[in-house]
Length: 209
Length: 373
Ligand code: SF4
Ligand code: SF4
Image (cartoon, rainbow over all chains, first blue to last red; front, side, top):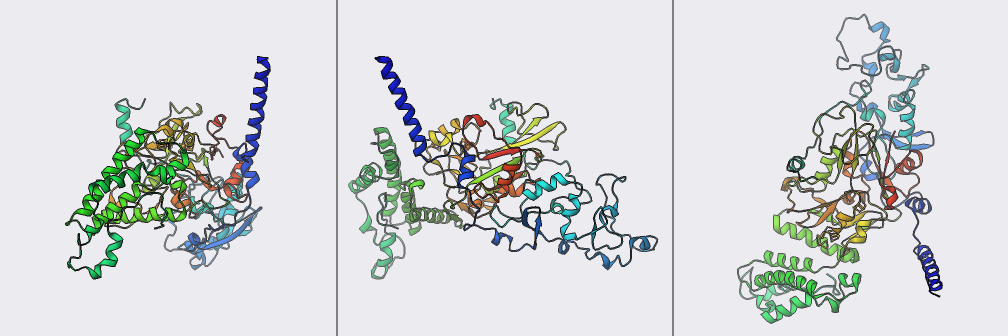
């Protein structure tokens, strides 16, 4: 008899648990919730206001369409042809002021890359792809993507790089050269900007553990 | 202010005075020419204080709505003491002939703030009321203005965060930006974000991690990863709060009403991620460093003895901006967005990168994922 009561109790509890689970309308995991309730966001919040002062161009890369900052207007020495009025080969021997003394190439090694790997010596206002086609300076990500294809994939999706402004649509992402100096794309070692002296003291006093 | 408030209002003559000034014969511009009208006798004051504190049982204030229990003597007594203190202040100012209008207004604000309900249960008007009072009170105390908002969660938004472990270099720009954005106490050097320096090849060993390094980074043979409040979808910290001062908003942010928190620190003990920070001392920020764009649930000034933590910068994210840490990170290791939007970049990360969360088996469902390149 006692056993029976126990079993009834258990069954009752089980049913109760089952019901409450359903009734709550809650999902079992955040992943289910996201997938079931998700839909493209067209709500009140947008990044329009935040992006107002940025010069942007719309690009489509793969299945992603988004905005990136315009570049040519940001380069002080553009257009290049203002100085490079003839092909580089012809300018080389010329007497004259040295330019670009501040550019030190620190990108791969000299066996792999020199200026003309990316710049088109015949047409200085444009970049040059591996197959000798022109790439607009505004779309320089295409040049980078030739070698850095996995980063390119991540960047298109949004896993690599930063947004220009907020999270809300429309999406505007920084392009490669907004964070990386194309002539020296790596990040330098440096001191962290923050040091918590309080914690150091506490640790010395043995309060930490 | 609405008439059917959940707490007793003490009128210190602020409102009456405006009508009365014309007919006021005493010629004083300040002080007590009509304070007689509003002056409370000791008995009246006592009645008012009791009414305002334990009289709630009749008014069914926010506290009651939540718990629906009779207050025990100890709680009643505590509230009564606090009320008496504030009441005493209010009455002494209202009776005084020398104290100016500003002090009276301040006392009135303190009174209203003391007896307001839980923010979670407030109507939009009440929310507006409390932030207006807080802004005015700041102005009265410091002579400076702040802007405080009380935006509610937006529909169809659920905030989520992703952290790229291979990108983080330990520069700590995020920590700095967070401290500045969220007005964290400078004396105790409170920080919501921790960046852990871990040895390569040993996995996540938080015990052995150094989260207070100071040398050039990235250090040889180490990697870096950050933790903060993960805004769990099933937050244990919320479960344990005895007064429901912390809760999960519709957009997934786990927030704290600093005015409702009693500082018991249960939530701190319940959080498996070291996400919460307690104000052991009065938080202080130099006036010129205060971020004046504030949200009630976010970076407004806290007081001693209350809990605080990362809010995904509610004052920014509910305006469509990224949290300060995301904006400050120089390596792009931090990604923030709307989990419900299938076109958002965070959703792309979740779908295309190999993501994981900390202590997933606890079932806390953090909305903070880690991934690697
Ligand atoms: S990380 Fe901790 S404080 Fe944040 S929601 Fe989860 S349990 Fe609560
Ligand atoms: S410290 Fe505050 S928020 Fe945390 S459990 Fe206690 S009352 Fe609730």
